[in-house]
Image (cartoon, rainbow, N blue to C red; front, side, top):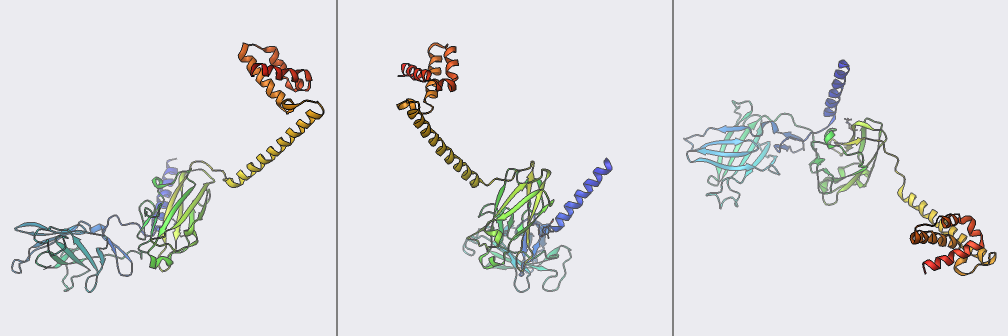
Length: 405
Ligand SMILES: *[C@@H]1O[C@H](CO)[C@@H](O)[C@H](O)[C@H]1NC(C)=O
């Protein structure tokens, strides 16, 4: 038994590992990442918050400086710490020109004495990142990297720093600007071409419930690149037990843009109940880029019947109603004619069912009037017989008028 459990857990682990390997790009765990000019991702999460210190040179009147990577830049001198800006990730961690491989901008440092220079941005810093050695060829003593040079612009309101670090291997090429979310303006699933945590591999907590039979996703892309988006495909793990259909404008490969998102409706039905969620592996091929993958989990606590076509059901119901109305009208007329011609009854009494109605009213009134009418009840409840007899059918309406009218 124990052997069996161990084997199973080992299998599960192997499965998870495989899934991890198969999932293309995992989202960086911080905002400390960027793309090179060709769109390959570089994730610097590992050295985020890392401190790079620069020892000032008294003779050149350069104070100490400290970069806390992807956080802030501080100048340190006898006057105390002066902040030269905080890391502003969006659009301010970009590929560089010339020597620099990447450029980071830090904004909103201390404002005092810099009010007029920097448009109220306070002190700012520009960090030119070089992958490898400093531009003057000097190697860093520290393996992680070092500050190569520091220079101040616009009298101590802006500092420009050259930082040499090891950038590691580039990640895959990313189709930037592409988003997938559960609303036209949302991007929970894919943000900026990167599959977000929770959707990059099957996860129990992110699964949809059994009763959720349809999920709509919305795609957006940068207008100029929208034509690269192709028709999505999917696979299901395990293969059997969940029926999936894709529909909506995105399912045919319509180009999405930022202003007009396309929609992908995932319609699913549980054919087989299962303890663990099914994983639907959706792949959006992007021309010229690696495809975008994401997983949607689906719980199947019970088997679901094939949905009957609703409109068809109502049409049948309508037709049946129609036939019923026509038939009852015909019977009513026939009964009326029969009673007037054959039984020679007139007016209301000739209407079919009138005797029944009258009998019913009598039973009701009898019961309320004296609370006791067993003989009458028996007589009138056997209306089938009594209705044929002229005697009862004549007498009953009289009674009725006596009590009601
Ligand atoms: C998801 O689908 C893609 C494309 O069909 C495939 O390459 C990938 O291996 C699949 N992932 C898993 C875990 O099955």
